Image (tube, rainbow over all chains, first blue to last red; front, top):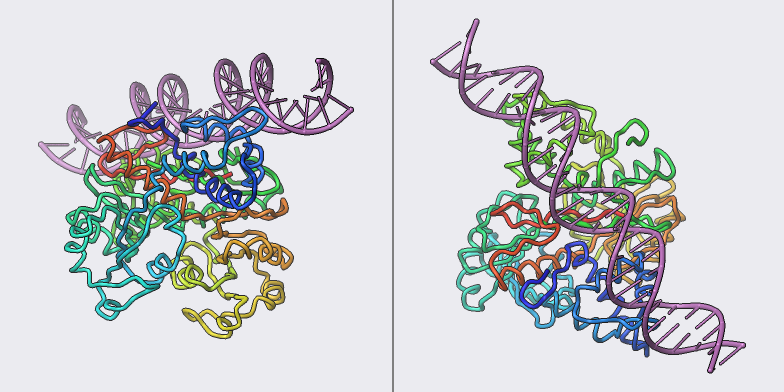
Length: 238
Length: 238
DNA sequence: TAGATATCGATGTAAGTATATCGATAAAAG
DNA sequence: CTTTTATCGATATACTTACATCGATATCTA
């Protein structure tokens, strides 16, 4: 199956790509030219078969007995995710979470750069957080149109999420990274990615509970290799 | 399938539970006594069938033509997740992300309360963040043992993650909520839940890319109902 | 009381994901 | 040059999850 010229990657695969990228970029520092699926699997706690399956849709091919060319692999992954050229993003809501996101310097490595922040609270605007200017929310539209920004990061309290999302969409935003625990209603031509910390916490709670109740109980969907006890990040991606 | 007395819930189901809880608790404020799977489905963008399936393993039953008793449902979910009695947790790493987590007052609703924080940097210790004391990391072990804490939140830079995880485990921690982009190696009797923001960003990038390439392309695993365009949070939970 | 509507619960189907197996190929070792 | 080892790639299988259908039950309305 293809979209444009790209063969399709499943969402679980997509979610694993950043991990692969991290290991691969560390490997660049060494002298290694190639890397095997086995190596990556061990480094990340996956099965080698999963790794090969993940790379299968990419327009590259490994060599038997050798592995994959590290640079080719990095490029293929970044191409697929669209992380080669950095995209600008705006963030709304400079509370704790918003500030944390502004402070997280890692997004540029993942193709996204937060270039401006906004807040409704006048006390928080007209300052900079981590070198990023914070403007009043009223200026969002003007700036978004002017800078042709397409990605919005929503880090506001639940009750503001929907109206601000609508404001974003009117200003041309087409992708919303939503950290508010709210289901946003958006038109078809806008994509939303929800991030809900409570989900991970729920999983952790249950894992701990099950760990206590009985040593080891296989559970559906739980594919973590012993002894890591990780939870596959198979965030469903509707 | 059961664990102890509880019938098993799949990880995707578990991840949806916090969303159900939120809607249900909002509903408590109203006069409604019952709620239908259809209502919850609409509120959250799921299919009614998914909702009923999610509740099926719980020790409750709905009434045809009526729905589920709201209070029963809340209790059943909280029981299953172990969110009835609040569990204490320690957090390590008071950088941006750690501070954000300390500022996020929502965890108590989810059965977890961060009661103490730790940091290696002396400049950050012996202060309070959001009324939570920050102590030097050396004191972690003593306090964890004394307070019998079992949950550790790891919000440190990648290079510190493994050693601090080991320190946690030595101090009796059995569940680690890991925000560092690192695969932790832990013994069998410790569970880890990894939280990696890059995963969600990867999904968002690909969604946006696919949206641009062509209007609508069904993609495996993507079950978002039109027009929400959400990504199922099917974080695989190995 | 009777009919219409809403909803659950059970069963079955389909899609997606993870896992296993096996032959072919490449490099390294003897 | 031959053997061994490591690895990919293709195919097949099992498991999980999502989705659909249908009969039974409960409430509401006339």
